[in-house]
Amino acid sequence: MNAPARDYRRFGDVSAEWPSLVAFLNGTWPSGVNSIRLPQDNHLDLYIRGSINAARKQRTTLPVFFTGAVSTRDGNPGPFFSGLRLGTEIADAFVSIADPTMSDNAYLRLAWYTGRAGAALQATIAAVLNAVARRTTQELLMIGGSGGGFAALDAATRLRHPASVLVWNPQTNLLDYSPGPVLDYLKAVLPRTPSDILRMTRSERSAALTCGGITHEITLPTRRLNSRLRRIVYLQNSGDTHVRDHAMPFFARAGFEDLGDGLYGDQADCTALVADMSPGHKPPSPDTIRYVAQALINTRTTGRRVLRNIERDLHEESSAQTPAAPQRRHTLTVAGPGILRAGTSDAGARSYAFHIYRDDARIHETGWLRESSYEFAVTPGRYLVRVYALSPSGTRSAHNTNSLVVPG
Image (cartoon, rainbow, N blue to C red; front, top):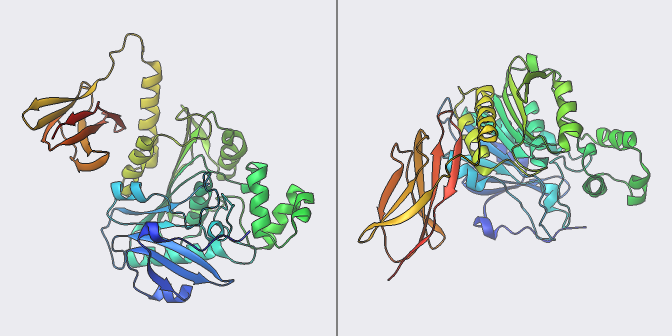
């Protein structure tokens, strides 16, 4: 089913419309939505924040975000961009890519960025990202969860420039995902009737996708020969069926070894952590994803060290004697006329940051501070502070204080 026209208004409309991929590759890319016309009357939409038209800071990565399933779509028009908030929190520039197949089908909720058979969308996305990497001279950091994780891994294996990957609960063979979404996807991308697709065996579906130029399984057969793919950080919930259906088969194909404590990896810096981070297929906490993504902005940070820090914090949290442990308190109190104080009793952290909200809008944020309290002047309104704590191992936690109303 065709989707309604794309709705760009929530992203500030379109900053640039490119008549072809070649025009985009040779053009100057403004911040905001860049819409590239592709064959078959299709479009590839990118959201660009910051300047990426010239060489940028070395020893830092440029985040690139891919969207997973849009479970609450309900026929709403695309494009769908992920990572806009996280990107602004961890970097001064980033790129987010919308899946054009999602935008072209009103009720399709997941399409893995493969495009329709014969469209060569996966190669087109790689061409765009190679151009970005070449122009910025930065290593790209591919980020995505679930179906977006599949796309991030696939794109990284196609690049001719250095890349790192951060994924959580990804599919690694899209045909092994839930039958309903897979069937909807196949109807959208294969030139077959729905009844034909229903009758096809798994091997026939695999052959049809391959014949259409679509890669549906992530493999790293030349990983050790390809130094351009420098780091993979793979987060997997232990209670997710993806452990059996996607993670373990991928680890076997990639030559990952069991390193103990839920860690798997190769002799390079490609590492996975299988742990109880969230229930089922839900993503790890935003704080965990933000911590890992922020760490990987630095090209010198090893993914294995980051995952060992997370594993250690998870172990300490689960082994703590909860009834005897003191409860952490995060409070907002009146410190004086027109002054509020946000504080925490989490004295074991290395540093703290305070994000101040008035009437549900963030109005100020501090950098990392050594002090576990922070005072600030206020005007009338309802205030709440989100307190971030950085543990000695480098893991972040975040808690909200109580709210206080400052009368007018």
